[in-house]
Image 1: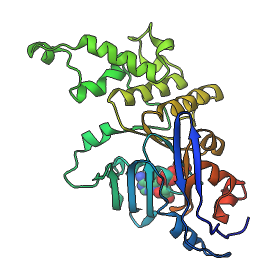
Image 2: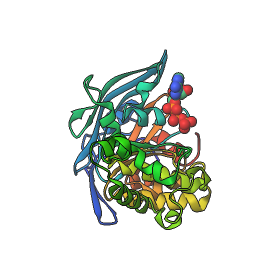
Image 3: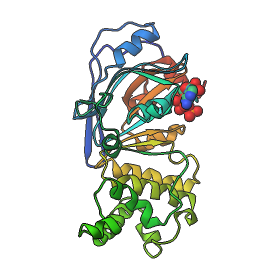
Length: 313
Ligand SMILES: Nc1ncnc2c1ncn2[C@@H]1O[C@H](COP(=O)(O)OP(=O)(O)OP(=O)(O)O)[C@@H](O)[C@H]1O
């Protein structure tokens, strides 16, 4: 494939279950042999039809002197799966963590740019971080349930956010939402496709579950606080093929109601489950972002094609 870009504006329609995402390629005239920078500049403001959930503009991240993410701009459409792929160390996790300000916890990290959630700047100094992380939940690479019962793993977040009241304070104030808690635990576990496997042992310690079950419990825990966006950092990388397949099915199912952004090293997984794919390459650049079929079948950037076909990375 050459470096040239299709000069014709095009509209691709991608169907995922009941949902359709329409994408429109940029119409700027292009010439063969265009530089990577020109390619990137044309794709960085790639716009999808449909509602934007997250809008990232000119995002830079430094860890001390290390410039880990360079001038990243992209729109993430709601109720879809956006995959972030690229070689190790290219900044995928850094980018993901920027979307709910988890990098704030890293002392060395300095962030510049803008991330808007439905038009509201999340880096506003007055932003409520607890509320933000309720709206934008995160699932990590290694399952990390609390060393508590399955039930408590689910109810911990809603209780912290005051969505359910239980225990001494609840009794003092005349509220005890035990029943509501039961419903919430059941709903969340069903959404995470775990209910059938654990419904008869909700009071067992979560650490007794298998790795795949623990990861689905972490997804259920994330869902229990009713998020709008779910960020997933290689959620299946520590799991066997069967558990991985369950997580993939779950991600596809969740995208009907939630906006999912997922980092994966597994390109086949990205191709299988995502609607759009962002390719980061070494140096923290977002090189190309497009409809997943386009990225895997006919990418614009030669470097992306080389990466996808395994010539490097
Ligand atoms: N907490 C940190 N402190 C300092 N540097 C960091 C930190 N986290 C990441 N980095 C650096 O930032 C760059 C991007 O790292 P990041 O983990 O975001 O990449 P990645 O694409 O997710 O990698 P991988 O696929 O291996 O997980 C790397 O050079 C990494 O060493």
